[in-house]
Image (cartoon, rainbow, N blue to C red):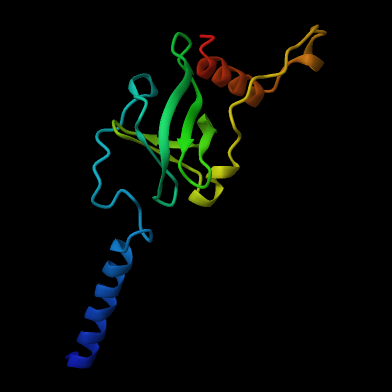
Length: 153
């Protein structure tokens, strides 16, 4: 069955609108037309890499990788965000989606980046009585982040 010119034109416009929406800044993935480089391991990720939200917006720069390379354990990232007042935030390993030579892609949307915890020193423990005094995995990661930022390690 032949298709009339109005149907063809409507189909072409729909296709052009989809392309326009996909390429409009802020509407599609940041990766469109941007070369992040090759996928890499956290072991070779360098400070200064772009940090990209799950919805494709550049939300900051990588400050530090928190890991224990000897045990091959990736804890997370300290990032310097440039939204609002800025500052450093901690992204847990579970919140990291992909690592590339020049970028890190998070599983966190841009609107949630400022809600990530700030790296802070853990309060000093005067005595340890066992399990009830042990720190949570997040507290441990934040303490390690603080130690790294403050130059302790």
